[in-house]
Image 1 (tube, one colour):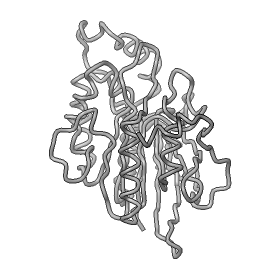
Image 2: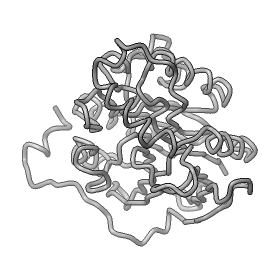
Image 3: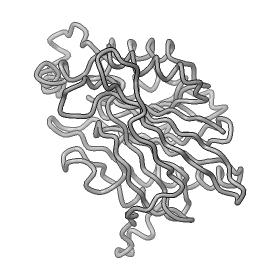
Image 4: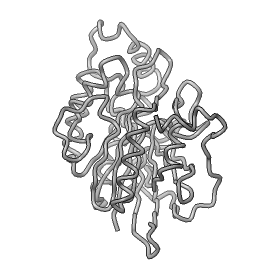
Length: 322
């Protein structure tokens, strides 16, 4: 059995001191939003409790699906690097960026350089940039494939993007991992299903992503962004592929969103060439009580609607092959 942990949307705080010139862009709206809502909704005390519980749980690996920062300030990026170093090295942790890590133009490349140990394919020695995605790394029986949907967007927008360049590389990586009999985990910040996020926060390229998975397959898709512990399914080559979200790691009790939590996946090969996947969700339920398992699901036995890609447009059918 191989055990994978999953967290997302750490939004490490508090915000550092900010110079005026750093607010003369989209950051001004994020700065106001932080002080109006996020500073009270998210807290390092809850985040630390979640992280400690994970480290006590004898996990084999941890996937983090983005939004380490709030405004992608250089000081925040450095603080996130230090947090990652304290939590685990690149053999133990894999990371993809979120929209808050690409809050303004140029920020994502700075984050990629600082967090390169936790991103990037096995054996790659060149510096990690915003164009290094997707990456693939093997850990035990798993192939962790990291996609970046992060891009600087206009004020009041939090959209993500998945385009043909990443789609082509993702298809090749999924096929390679399949040949190696690896359990394929796709890490992506924005949920790749319709209506999972509001229009101004959605992923552009959902249909393209779902076409790649339906043609090349995957065993598990992990995302963040919504701060919700959701479960969806998309079509794979051999049946449904679970799409699993998680609440924000530092979400305080009593807020509008569920309190901080993490996902635990126990992954075991079965006797028929497939896999058994058990999901347990551990969440903060009290101010001082230990985290509790609040839900458990056998993902390889799901009986729920499957979202299929739209094949009605012939132009769309050819997009991946170009």
